[in-house]
Image 1: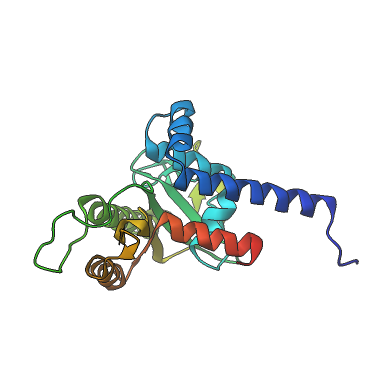
Image 2: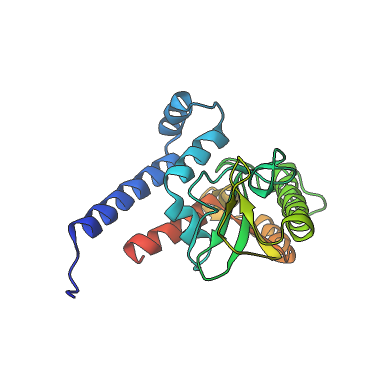
Length: 234
């Protein structure tokens, strides 16, 4: 077998580089983002990112951790979890549910906000102390509750099997032990004022996200940089 790139390899790399450019424009060009929002089937800034990640699951999977991830089956990232659908019928939606690639898959639940969602409250709780914004705290709580309910449902009723919408079991083994939970939200640019980083805000944010043991909080600009590393090794 030769070690050279095939035409399919070149096409894949080229497409991913194009999508990285789109990712960057969505992050940095408000007019471009507004245009994308106006063309989206479902209105709202979150819908723009949802559609982008649906089209580019490689960013979402490899970008959140260095374990290869993919959608739970051949379907969409956004799924109904607790109460029905993939775990047996209709229930609560999660922005993305994925599984690691391996002989036995583990689950990953994710809530996707927007790159402009505030990470911290605008006014300090005390001098030099900022608490998490309502959207950040709510996103963390939401993904925790969703993952916990789904875990209980699978363990109690459906073991490690998941199902098609018509009830047909899918031959995928899922580990139900402590599914990974991720919130993609905001941008670290929030902490830069007049070209300098606000140390009180940055430290407040870092202390908060490192204190949440079961949930990884990642900003859109961090996710973009991870995607750049995958495609361009930078």
